[in-house]
Length: 208
Image (cartoon, rainbow, N blue to C red; front, side):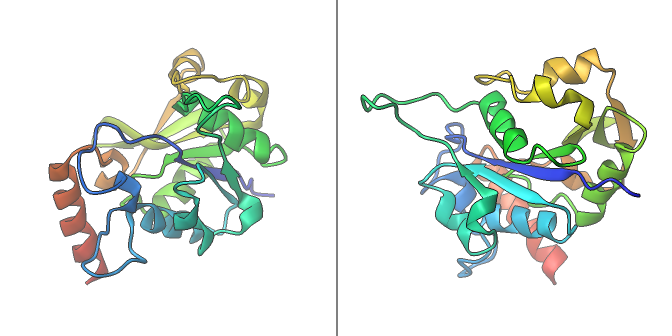
């Protein structure tokens, strides 16, 4: 029976490197279409795989996901402690929360929410890689990209991640296997206004 890993979409970061009107995940990819935000487009690609999808986000950004993903599949991380002090929400904490929420999955694909150009077939190709490897990742023309896949044997290490360390240590320790794909979207995330302009152009070309 083929494995069905869960896709963990990371959407809880502050996006502090992006300087624009609103959070980077709220940016529209198609003019005048509130449904075509960066996060919504990323989620549609993930949902089209028909694999389980969980979104790790904050109360501020959760509304972007609610019209696409069931409430039970949205994990909201607190932005403040009980004294009102801001809590650091790093990639490690987000991954840990997403994996813990889908503990019965056949592995996990980690996909940042600002990567809407990663194709559905790419996600499925990396998911298939978990049939053979404990850790694998999408690779385009020799360059590492997302998603990154983790097998069930890494559950305890994934849920122990903290802060902003992400999973690079695990990728290095387990000699992650590259999965070659013909998909430049695995390398395209959103940090700057130039990134957004390029992303909009490529997204609209793909929709045409």
